[in-house]
Every structure is written in structure tokens, then in C-alpha cells.
Amino acid sequence: MGSTTEDIVRRAAAAFNAGRAGEARRLCEQELKRTPGEPRLSHLLAAVLYALHDIAPARPHLAASLAQRPDNAAAQLLAARIARADKDFAAALDHVDRALALAPQREAFVEKARILDQAGCRAQAREAWQAILKVVPQHGEAAARLGRLAFEDGDLASARSHLERAASDDAPASTWFDLGLVRQDQRDHLGAAAAYRKALALKPDFAEAALNLGIVLQESGDRDTAMQAYRQAYHLRPEMFGSIAMALTSASHGRLWLDEAALRLALAS
View (cartoon, rainbow, N blue to C red):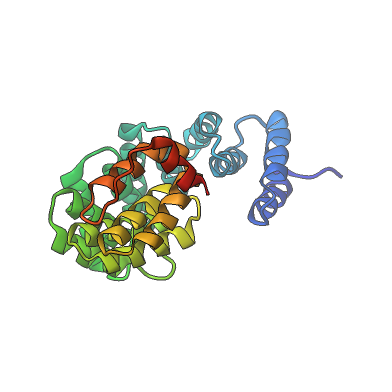
């Protein structure tokens, strides 16, 4: 007796959850040839494709699933995520609002905040992140995004408060980098250096963090360690040479390099 669709769904889901996305995709695609548009398989295949960052084919599969199960909140939420990844923010908002109407869960509220944020709806995004933080005070992403928005508005005190709240051990490198920017603007060079070092520890190829680390170390008078950071930035991204040269010569503790070749040699060493 052959495998049923239910068996294939279970096997594909187990493969996907075990990190074998390729196997899950193959199982779904094979079974969909036999049962085109089957809603559970279409939903699962869309989830697999989304996880693989293969956005274009994910959308029609999820649309096929939603055509038969429009009241599936999980599918509506996935549709919102896929549309956001495709930068179709109007569709993303429509799907997330449907998901919220069906099942007002935290994940859907967070997804709506992300959509508004990425769509450039700053006021609405801020309100959405604030609402999340009010309900979940330890929500790191909400605090980090509110910190970034406050920084972009020039409200350094609020930005620092939010970002220091978000900067836990499991925070991403971007949060530590943003905290470094705020501290740097407040001329807290040692605090900024600590944040940039944390960003680099989490993301060793973070060239911007290495460059800014060099700048704040130079501003604090530690030129030797600053040069090490500049070398790291240069090795990570050689096209940053102009920014490094400008930082070296324009800072209050700068050094004049008249010979570009000599500076390149010093950074490459």
C-alpha cells in the first residue's frame, strides 16, 4: 500500500524540522504532482521555500493553499512574511491583518510591526513596537527598533535607553552596532568601543563595526589599537580605504598620511 498524503506531510514536516529542507522540498513537490494544489502540502512547500529564501515560487504555492483554506491563520501569517520578503508591503499588511482577525497572536503583531517598519511607515511602526514592548517588556527586537528609530530622530537619550535594554547576550550584532553609534554620538568612546567589539564578536565580518571601533579608539587617544581596528576593516573591505584615510587624518587624535601607498601598506600589514 502506497503512502497517503497525510504520510507525506508528516515525513516532509519531520525532514524540515530536522534541518533537511531539500528532502522536505522534494517530498512535497513529488506529492503535489499527484495531488496538485493540496492545501497542506502547498502550505508546507511554501514554508520550506521561504526558509530557503526562494521567495518567488513560494507565493503561488501558498496562494493555492489559501484558496482552499482562507481561514488558516498560520497560512495567512506565512503569506504576510513571504510578501514582506518580496517587498510587497500592501499584500503583506492585508495578510497579517487577516491573520490577526483569525487569531490575534504575538507573532502576528510582531510581523505587522516589521512590515510597517520596512515599508517606511515610521509613526505606525513606532506605535506597533511600543504596543509590543508594553505587553512584553523584555522583547529585545521591539526595544532595538525603537532605539534605532529614536536615534534616527536625534533623540539620543531615548535611543540609548531602548538599545541598552535590548543589548542582551543573545541580541544580534546590529543591536550592539546601533548602541555603539548612539554612545559614539554622545562621546562615550569607551562605551562605544565595548559595543562595537561585541558586534564584531557576534559578526566577525562586520566591516562597519571595525571601522567605527577604530574611530572611537582613536578619539580616546589609543592610536595603536585604533590602527589594528582599521587594519581589520581594511582586510574585510578594502574599498573602505577612503573612509579609513579620512578618519585617520580628521580626528582630534589623527595622524597625517601624505603617502597613500604607505598608508595602504600599513593597513595591509
